[in-house]
Image (cartoon, rainbow, N blue to C red):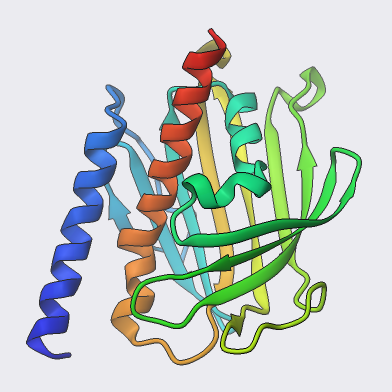
Amino acid sequence: MSSVIKLMHRLAVSGAGLLLGCAVPVAWSLDVQSPGAGWAEAYRTGELVIFTKDVEKGRRIVAIAEVEAPPEVIFNVVNDFENYPDFMPYVIESRVLSRNNDSEVVAYNRIAPPFVSERDYPLKFRMTRGTPANSGVFRSEWTARPDAEPEVKGVVRIRLNEGSWVAEPISGGTRTRLTYTLLTNPGGLIPDFVANMSNTVAIPKLFKAVMTRSIEKARAEK
């Protein structure tokens, strides 16, 4: 890795921690343990913890934070597909391809991450709202549907993308323990340092975006 690339990497990593720490101050410190054997702790601040595990198909990620907003507000934010370009990092296009009532959606996203070619991925989402029967836990789970939309010339189609957002109520439902999981393979040729930036830059930026928007929505609803 050249000295210039090393410098860019260091600046990006340090900047991500500053962004997350400054944007959404939180008084609580997370007490989160490893999901199990083979998982590595890739990132930890007082607001966010990220674990990774490389598997045959790609990389698994588990990220956990606590958010100053109710689970339903966060659930509505992460499922606001049409408005992703307004607040989600790197997303330049997002469209709903089909919708089956309020519990099932197929959506298309195109992203422009740094240092690499644009990527896109159609996903099928299944959403579950919190009820007394499930302890008020809201879920949004997805799997890849790579053939749901024609491929775009010059854009790499991500064919493995499975994950979830799980929003669990804490502090009497006024706050949320938010867990993000992902199994993906970004496709194409990606330098190792760029792939690793996903843990220290992209995921923290994603959480910062979701947390900031959720807190804004929660305040507006009061």
